[in-house]
Image (cartoon, rainbow, N blue to C red):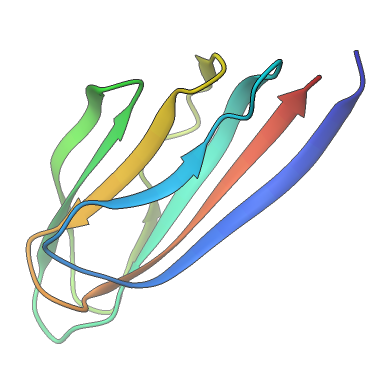
Length: 103
């Protein structure tokens, strides 16, 4: 099984849940990190889900800050699982998801 490292950026995340990534068929994935940057002058909160469960809910991100939403944790996903993110404010965050795909 070869391992392939990939990144999935998303700019201008807002109040509608945005799908960052869907695991391809015949693939397993390890989420290596998910970094978010607050683009606004106010604090926002973000919620991230993986495989249809919350892995971080209403995480505060201060104005002008960025953070690793998963705090160094690793999450395993199977084929067809999705990763989504949503912010408390419109057009308020940039996000990058880093994964290792195993095919």
